[in-house]
Length: 282
Image: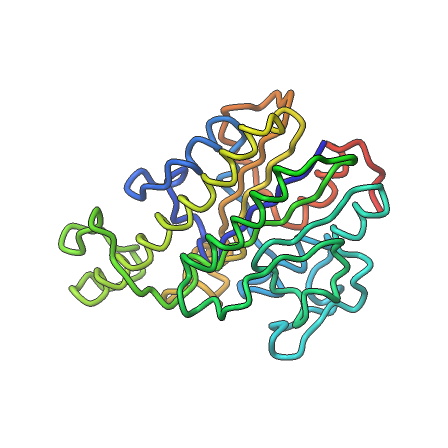
């Protein structure tokens, strides 16, 4: 099977498969067609340590990623990255967009890297859309071997620049750890808008996968790195800081359409993919 790995930034579980008040229909559809994990946890509530643990199946203190990649931290051995493992098993590996486990994405070892050259914080939606265009173009190519395609979005990272017309700050329920006041409601409306934008970008890639006839040959993994960027969430060890969304969809899944309450961790993802792909665990 091919592998399509989709990941958003700072989303926790504040998405429609977990909260019906947040409108992310593409992710909800993916959850209903796959398996939703309701008690998935990351291995570190900041970006690089969390992603590094998922992609190596080693905890941050084992793989060397004790801090953020853009502040000088790195994996002790990039050969242990999932992309390089799959490359050794004849996969073509492609990165489109965000990655956050290396200061220079080309040092990771992907066969092909497509990242919009603009600074992502200038316009999150434009950056995610551009990288999504690269993912779509790749999916439309003729493939002679299975692929591992990583599509990384900068949404739902701060800053939140806009509020969608469908999101009215006056009528929002903010997360329970936050004070319920006009300023917080408006800030949270910015997050919800970012989630809506991310979902639209994800839907474009998933639609292309269907249109190209690749859906029945592809394992889709969606997750995020850690909790949302609000007080008592991201950068904390509360459930709101380390609890993350996770959906897995693949052909012949006996748990299709189910939500699982079992305690799971990002550390489990790599060996689980090995099992599903019929590959030996390193």
